[in-house]
Length: 164
Image 1 (spheres, one colour):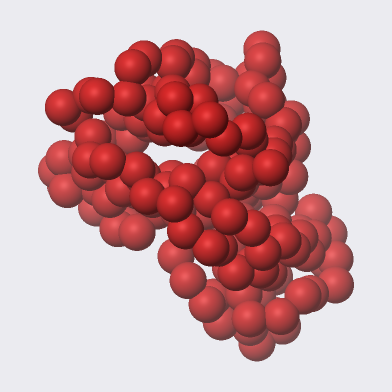
Image 2 (image 1 turned 90 degrees about the vertical axis):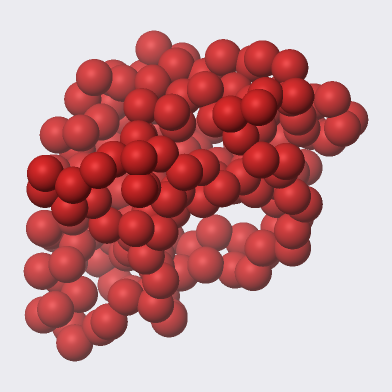
């Protein structure tokens, strides 16, 4: 996934929205990875997170997420995350993380995860065209759970980029 910055009049994506994003508490496994290692991080992290939450009797408060810290380069500082109602203590590789309340630009992406790179480019391009600065936090929330053998065109992913 690379983040290109095309003009924001893409017919492939809907118009982004500006929203006030509340504080979000997360259970995370965070690592710095190359783009081709992202799937294996997710495959490793989610079982660890859900096991830690289950052991603590904590239920997720929203669908799973991936949180990007800083600007992507050759690698990505990525938190594989599950939203929860309150902060948690660290358990092994699973740590608590809290995203601050912030103004954000959001974009709903419908389709295969392969679209996410161009969707981020579109969103960042739109943010720049609107004259906003970014804060260094972006996330994607997986609103639908992929079904093995299912149609990836049915995926829904909400992207958010926090504004400075």
